Amino acid sequence: MIGWKNTTYPSSFIGLSDELAKVRSMLSADVYHKDSEKYRGKQEHTIQQLGIFAELIARHILDNNKSVRYKAAPLIDKKPVVEADIIMQGVDEINYIDVKGVKSEGNALRINFKAHNNPQKKVTHYLFIQPLNGLHARFCWFTHKNVSEWNVVKSTYTDCYELIIPQPN
Image 1 (cartoon, rainbow, N blue to C red):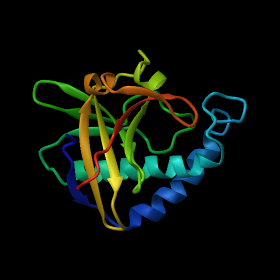
Image 2 (image 1 turned 30 degrees about the vertical axis):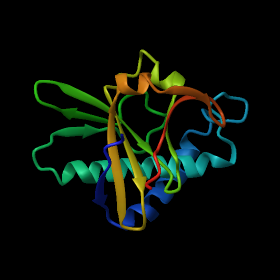
Image 3 (image 1 turned 90 degrees about the vertical axis):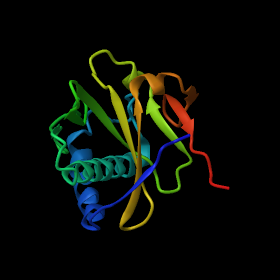
């Protein structure tokens, strides 16, 4: 069972994530080009926008929890960053969190197989964020170990770990 929690977010995140996605796509064009295995075709902007949107909501969630101390990776950088999106101080531990956006109509949680198993990328947790409408989203957490136990499937471009989101009755 997925332990979803609901949250709200500023509606300005929608336009802001769209603007930042344009810049991020331009900066990473040499990485996500047509002849690379990371190529995402016409979906590039949509994927970037959803990722930035989810990262903004994640920061918003953490900022609203005054007892949480964290550091966030830059939303925009010259090259894609191979590190956790958020490093959060936990109780006697440090959590390395990768934030993943889920389309509003999405029916599955997915993690890229190679990225998940990349020894250079330290991740202890995944935070999935799914927008529900223009002001509300839901989120859930999984550990790295949890994701390792999911089914591996062929996605549009690569292999990925996948967990189907149960539909309410």
